[in-house]
Length: 125
Image (cartoon, rainbow, N blue to C red; front, side, top):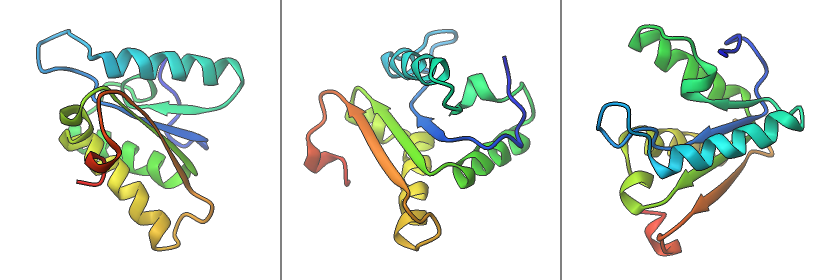
């Protein structure tokens, strides 16, 4: 069920949703969905793009993602490969969130990662 875009999100979950094949979700998406469900049970308002946004045009979709990024103080990045971590959307989301923290826009902002098959040194590239 889609949420109201004006909601005050608490956690932004970033992951690569699809592997490019129509209807085939990534392992990252399945793990992120498990996390989303766990947070929801604890009444923590989590943002996970394709669960939290109605089917809308691309410009409005991007705006809702940016709004959610602006509202949350916590981001969880889920990646099971270096390629998924460096996918266009995931990289944009977590690097943008990190820049908000560095610039002081997100005081007390935190980024957590759940990664597999990725060395720490590969995360900053």
